[in-house]
Length: 327
Image 1 (tube, rainbow, N blue to C red):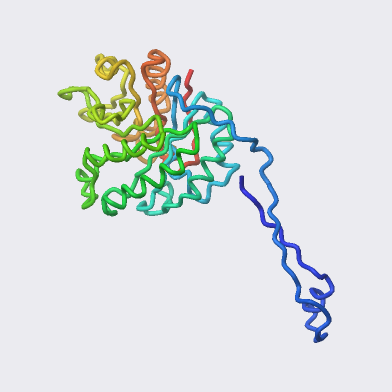
Image 2: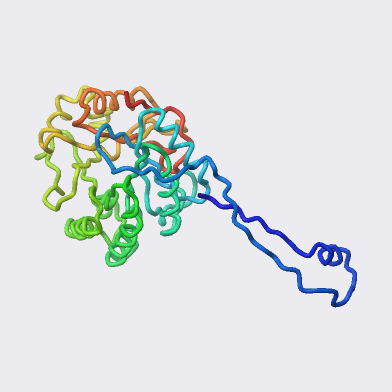
C-alpha cells in the first residue's frame, strides 16, 4: 500500500515569527516536526492471493512494472483491465537494469523492496497472478555468480506469495547470439537456479526455450532439469510471412503439445505494436492476428495451451490499447 507523508509543524506561534523574520529571542522550545503515515489507497483490500494455477491461464507482458512511474493505482487498474478480458497473470521483470531508459525500455534497477511492494499490491487483487522473470537484463553485463546471487534474493521475496511463479531467465540463448556477453548462462546455470527456487518452496519454475516449425524435436529441452511447464518463444515469421501457433500452422501447435506431455505455455508471442511504427517481423499492428492465436490456444485447446499477450506497451508496463480476449 502506498503511504503518504503528512507533516505537522508545531508550535504555530514560532512558525509565524520565523516567517516574518522577527528576532524574538528564546521564547520556547525548538519547533518539532512530526511525520505521520496515512493510508491513501483504501481501494486495496486485504491479501487474497491463492495458489498459482496454470488452468485457463492467460498472461500479459508488463516487463517494467516495477518502474516508479507506475504507482499502486495504475498497477491495480491495469490488472483489473486485463482481468476483465480474462487475462489473469502479469508477467514482469524483477529488473530491467540494462535497458536504455526511454519508453518503452524503462530502466528498473535491482530493488527487492520495490519488488515486494508490487507483489503485495497484486496479492490484494482477487484472481490476479504473477510470473516473475528473475533475470531479464543482467545476462551478459553482470558476472554469472552475481546473477545467481540476485536470483536467490528474488526467491526470498517471491516465496512469500502464493500467487507467483518464476521464470529463471529471459531468452538465455540470445545472450551469445546477440553479442550480449561475456557473462552468459548455460543450461547448468539454469539448473542451479531451478533447484534453488524449488528449494525455497516455489512450486512452478520455468524458463523459456526457442522453437520453430521443422525443428529436429519439439520437446522442451529444460524438462530434464525439472523446469515446468514447457515454455517457448516461437518464430514469429517464417520466410517473411507471419506465423502464429494454431493459426494455419500445419499441425505445429498440436505436435508441440503432444511432444510436451499435453501442455505448453508460450511465454512470448508476436508483439502487438500500439504505436504502429513497425508492423512486421517480431511485431504486428493487426489486433485480429493476436486474437486468432489466443482463440486457437486458449479457446480451442483449453487445458492444453496457455499463452501470453506481448506488446510494445507491455515492455513499459502501460499504454495498452487493443487487448485480446480469453474467451
